[in-house]
Length: 256
Image (cartoon, rainbow, N blue to C red; front, side, top):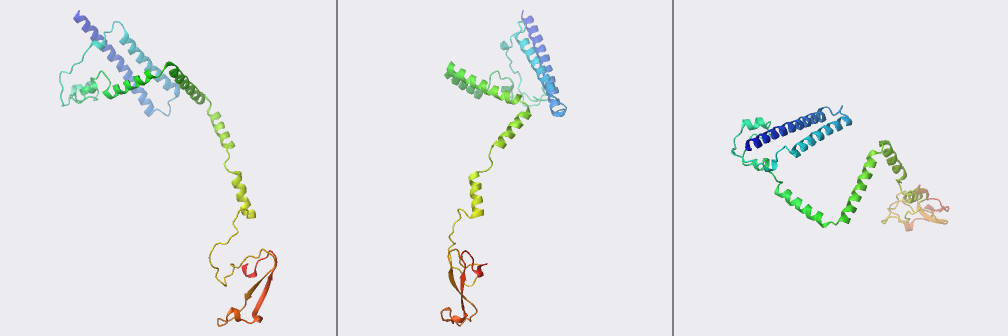
């Protein structure tokens, strides 16, 4: 009886190894196409590769669930020899992925449960899921389904429709403020809103272009013509003084 169970176990293990090898070859082929033939790769070909992998995984699941397959859960693997030295047979068997069977890697390769950190996270998620009532969970499911449906609808729409919608949104969105534009035009054309006060500071005498603007009624301004440095402006004869009458709205001749 025991020999029969051992033979069944060996046959199941060999069948499982063969199925896993098929999955590995399919993955290698698909990865090679993605890395080297991506320019000629079409979406139907990608879907075919995914369908092949999915079918092979389903076959492995059926094999594990078969009644004739012994339960692998009841089997215990015990490492008989651990060594930090390189094992060529192990490296060849694992395609150079596991060259050493040491104390450092055994817990990772022979682990039957998740890491303690992962287990703790799973417990926290289970507690949070238990706190949510059925009604709240149903509302969240409906909201998620709605979001997924909207996303699928947008992805299924033709690209031209999305481009036209984006162009229409850009055209309808104003790119300027009419009030600011009118204020700028009024300030440049008519001086609307500009300050009329002059900047503070003394005005140097005798510099053209800094005389006062004549914007009111007729005014008189006294201008000195000639004259030496020894004479003062208050004592100069009236014969060398000229009164210039500015017309309304005009500028002083020295301010042109």
